[in-house]
Image (cartoon, rainbow, N blue to C red; front, side, top):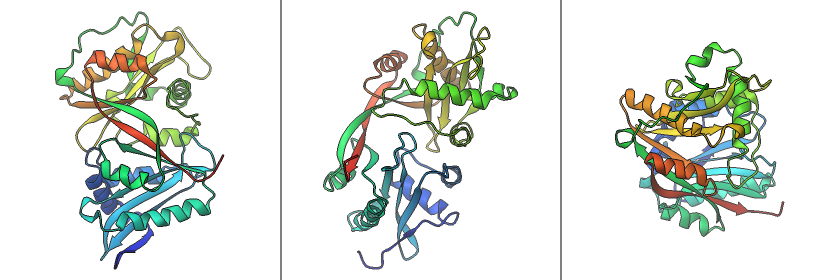
Length: 321
């Protein structure tokens, strides 16, 4: 271990601000705030394991690492990890020291697989992990668009369907439960290269709808008033838009039920959100698509989204499932 370096569990709420500063400096493309970390920490599913470690010297945080069960593709032996070292503390053995403690934790817990995500442009991070046996297993394409450069005029015909903002639908007492059901139906059709697991309603609402980054007035639900499904009611599609502290927006989910596809309705949802953002002052929007999702990729390219470097999913195999 490097001299005077202390590896310890994170102390919340005391470490929120310092941890956010480390994470933002390490990954300036996707900064975070103390408020976002607080919300994430306080609303994790308590049934799943999670812990955070920090490396500090002289009372100053140099690196942060979180590790816990993968709640999107849960198996008791599968974990997700994220290691970030402040740029000023790199190449000093800080990351290696924190990594050793992380590895001991997952091995003691009987982990068979650990996953993480990095940009393909992060050569130091990729080199660090690949030297320790991590392997690339999946890619996600990133696209970006500024509303000022988008053609927002060609709205598809909705027929008898209608669009409402998440804000407007707060009058529906079943909104959260219906969206939870709809989200699960839609996500099962997203080709993400893994078998997804469903989060409990309370955890999903807290993590998705009550996320302080989500902008309900820029997020839309598509409704068919002729339909009254016992689980989703008239809700047949939706899109969400969040705002990152870095000043850009990002799309969380866009989709419509299978029987409503092929009519340009997902495009209508995105256009509604983009129009609302443009009316509110405009800005950059980022979105992510998995390579097999060719229909959504074509739609995003047609809307003017431009490709960026890929995000890579890496895995460390510690045993055989």
